[in-house]
Amino acid sequence: MDVLSDVVAVTRTGRSRSAHVRWHAPWRQEFASVPGSAGFQVVLQGSCWLLPPETEPVQLGAGDVVFLPHGSGHTLADSPETPVTSPACGPADHQLSGAYISDSVDRSGDNGPVTVVLCGAYQLDLSRTHPLLLTLPDLIHLPAQPGRYPELNSAVELLAAEVENPRLGTDAAVPALLDALLLYTLRIWFNGQSSLGNTAGWAAALNDPPITAALHAIHRDPASPWTVAKLASEAGLSRAPFARRFALLIGQPPLAYLTWWRMTTAARLLRTSDAPLRSVATQVGYTSEFAFANAFKRTHGTAPGTYRRRN
View (cartoon, rainbow, N blue to C red):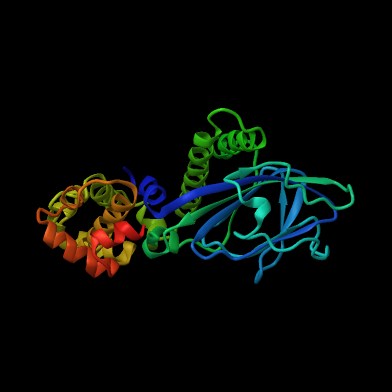
């Protein structure tokens, strides 16, 4: 798997959620901060204002996508001047308790102009949040532009159709489309950072062919007995320049990232499968179950078997 695919597959936990919500002006909806989550808002019809807590209001129009990778609190409203018309929306909101909901959640004003928004959230594993996500800003805004983001627009349209009109297979379609929406958003943002000439961090790493080749090698086969020299060969660089370049862009040495990824992969396997510990150890590059257990405990603070039972 490539890095972006793995970021979604491994760091997300629990069920993703989405809602198709219709408001009539005047309205104002607060969304509580939810650490350990990532969320998005997509305007399907009409317009509204995004009111972040510490920055200037942002006007949104139909087709705009807003991604909040750190679960930051924010507000949507028909106007920045509209007073609060309903309690803050959060995990305890019983109206939003389903995995997906539609227009039954209609927080209406006084039959003014209509705004329709597609909301969604992913629960993340806070203990294993991928460093790629940690480098993202609190808010990513992708304004609608005809023909500019065809894949993202298609995912939005399909997801909106499934949430608005659940049918046979919707339980499988919604999580897959949410993953696609997240992947397309991340891809667009990182490509945009490349065009801005950013030369450090994950934005630069994912647009650096040698470092990307090494990352893909690690993610494709974490069990391989990788050394710095072998990863440098994958990158097409000599050992010392590769190690310096990797640490500069990724923020840690190659073998430190390899160990982190192995332990993150092991945690996912323990949560999502009943594979024996020996099999999990082998899949992440350990020939000894004892050595794997020690490495896992150093990273997670608990033995693999205990971690599996708790999760």
